[in-house]
Image 1 (spheres, rainbow, N blue to C red):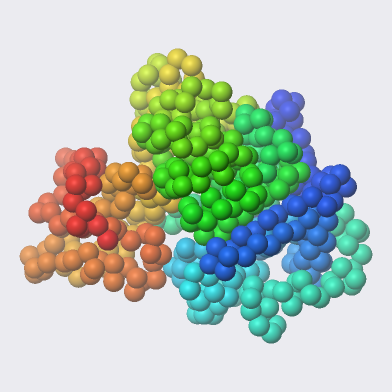
Image 2: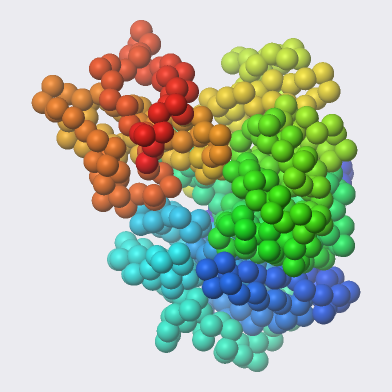
Length: 554
């Protein structure tokens, strides 16, 4: 993969001098953990549907990583090549990232919810050479889906299937075969060791263009977030980490893969969110920290009273992706001993702002925190002028964990001469430097922490005969933050259209179910500006009332 990215000397010099970048790789932290605590559990993985627990010590994890990394070399994966994986929260994702780091490959984690439409674009755009998938997860046949895509993916040379058979079996090809005996792993790993400024991760994020963007990060940009994040929360090697948020999200990647290895602690993985099950996991494993979107917190708070005393190890719950309702923070204070911490961030940065565990509890519901060390934010008007305290404007961010570019889309990077990046969010800042996200300038709806690519879905809906105009907006939801509402107008030849019609059409176009509208409103005309642009803010105002009409919900 040709990234076209070279470190900016001025940025690198400033980051090194400030201590934000330390040129350390995750494999350096792995080596330290293996030397210091080889028999400590590195990963504990729970598969909910099978009710199984798998554990790997740091020694066992490192042995697997060595074998997998040697196998990647044997499969002709070269430095800079993209290795993609579409996996649940299974230990193999962590091992794959570490193995890629050993040989200079780039990991591209893909969300398990993605289907043909998303994968066809992402795998081709990233030019993935290897893809690792489950055979079946949540009753979905990933192998059959990928087989249907291979004709469109000439760069994809190898597909390995966890739980698969024959030559495609991940276990047979990468775990059972002693690849490390065929090469001098120490010499190969030293030769291929990436620099801390090399791109090591590509994550796709949906934006307003309708085409996903491949966000590129380096070891320096990612660890510039992980280290101050752990410090803000006072986390140490004694604190085990629970991660039920997807490892293919930046949240799961940073704080479920990288942070535990950095701390030399245990990562506890759960592959399907289930509040009752996670309570069982917390009682058994006694994690001190977890992070997830607001709906996860709401579910845990609701379930916690049935598990009195069993969840007391959980000291920190970081919630991000949507504002935390004050009532939920109050309930959490009654039902959990954990301190609720709110945060705001992006795939492009990781967490940028976060409250402190020692802050008053109401700060978590009233703000999205203050900047982590090595990061800056400012609120500006549309001309770029900084606004006074309390005024709403564009949220700009800069600093050490800012990504290094969009894959093959340098024109979209949008970082000005001062290093400021436009987030697309609206915010205000209080006198203490705490921000509050008040809206989004980007045309993205966030449902349960998942960004919905609005323009892409709108373009598909325009293909339905009889639809004249389409506008998708979010409508408020107490649990998920937002649900997706489709506003449409019909031409004079069409008598009606139902929500089921819309969903069936989108599914035929292989769209992920998570991106389906849950409300449909047929209106006579779209509200428009004088220039003819649809005024979505007016539709959002109308959509606020849809929470009163649950019968229309999918």
